[in-house]
Image 1 (cartoon, rainbow, N blue to C red):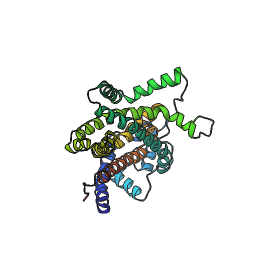
Image 2 (image 1 turned 135 degrees about the vertical axis):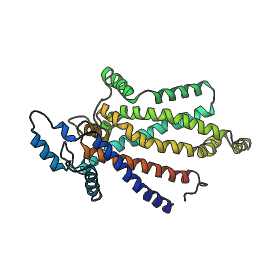
Image 3 (image 1 turned 90 degrees about the horizontal axis):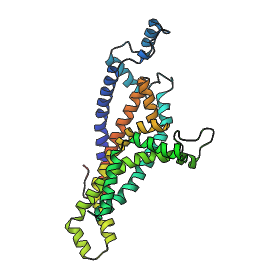
Image 4 (image 1 turned 90 degrees about the vertical axis):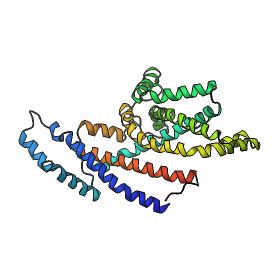
Length: 315
């Protein structure tokens, strides 16, 4: 296992390098961040001085290697908008994002696993049709539309939940206050993931239930609960783990819009602000972090394969 992990990490290094090259090239094609500064109050000489100070007068490949050299020394640069260290900005916003991601993932699994198993066991029943219909509805409704609908219902009409931020202004926050602010964004993210997971879990459990060894287990009279939860679910976890591993990067990227709608102080809100201001050091840092999350999720998925199914050997 350790050799396999080291091998995957070594393979990930050139992949990350290639991703940074593509991201930097696309970012440079989008235009210079100094275009925002141009106006009647700022002279061309001032803009040119700023370009030289930021090193934007050099060729693109030179700018890239300068950025890469600073990155290898642990320096991600400074924001062109706030002049803060990009590392400190990411450190400040990463915690709320990981909190929202983790809770949303757990809630989606709590919703999807029982519903998918129930739907598979009661195939073609009214309950099965209801669960499948709700799963299609959950995965089809756009996140921003569901967010606005929940804000209108629970904030505007009922006044039960806050619609923005992570804590109430003027207070020290606390667990209960943060939990109230998390309800709607977590519900939006979990609903979308659960809608997709339910169908995968249903299909995986249905396929396992048709295997001969489960018919033998039922014939031995070991009980329906043991047949479903010990034998069927354990063997259906491999495709489920695959889906979860694929959704971690999607969840990381999908939070951008949700955090913007709910003003959640995470990486999504910071990314949208950086894109609007063409804050390239921040954008490059977020792209690099996103690539690391994708590669780490794939590695974690492969490791979970071996834990779920001992017959799988990682070499």
